[in-house]
Image (cartoon, rainbow, N blue to C red; front, side):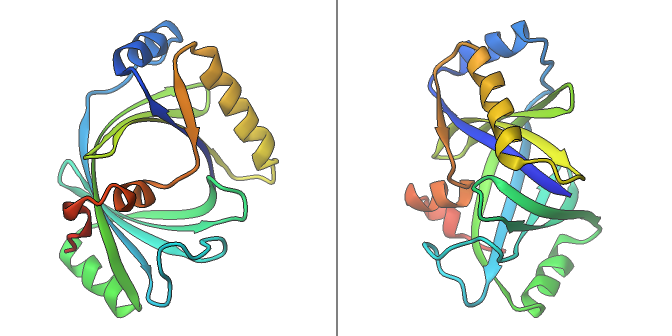
Length: 185
């Protein structure tokens, strides 16, 4: 599966929530997501990500999910594999045994809604801010740039102040100098 998304920094959360409501998006209640990110041992921040597989171990509502993401050359597009795991500590140990290193921890509150086949996420990322993510999961060869264009047009149709960004949350957390972001398992 390919994850194709766009991401926006949100200037006014209340205005965004009102616009999403007008657009018929019913957001769920905020849930806490505690993500441990992992990188290949020979990768350093600032190096290209395309073609390299990264991992994430997420805990949400007592459930643990392990995800791999392999970014393409196009920002905000990646091949993704995901599965629930029973034991976070054991999965953490397995990831280390596979040669990955913990890069940083990302903690956020997320509200999720769906419109058509698009996932709409409103994220409050600790010490970084509020973001809107729009995501399509594709199991075909559709053009990712065209999909991102459609997502961007939908975001513009909301009529709120949104700043498009292509940085990942780990990049933003690292840039913010979040001391908790460096905490690992």
